[in-house]
Image 1: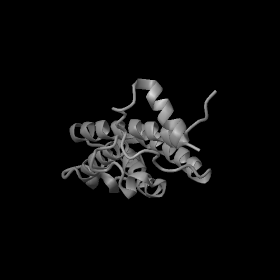
Image 2: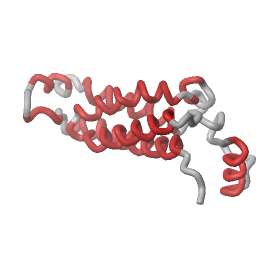
Image 3: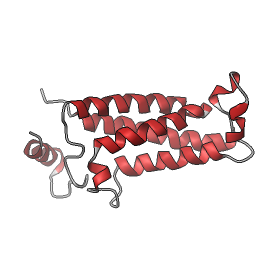
Image 4: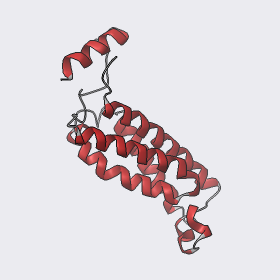
Length: 153
């Protein structure tokens, strides 16, 4: 069997969380609701009349998608290669997602992804083993496997 590359697993979990967060932000524009409104009504000003929480969720979700997919602008940059920067940004995304009623699933996925990223960081895995996720030179799955074998110690 192969070795579990934890940062790739965490990347897929965070991609799922970010896509859920974008969807919940869009849904939050239609049905604005704070998750914690059963305890206090003080946070209702964050969702209506001005949808501040929805906009922040949309921006952090799109940033998470652009960072983990990655866009050509992010690929190979220091923040894209760094697990430490991810461990700083994603708890903020999880908090913003947990405040919105529609984003609680995304918050749970973010917490799982953060835990796996922390596991990878504590074992010394590199943040990103390739500059871009473009395997055009590779011939499908065999080329990707050869690339990973060559670049993973």
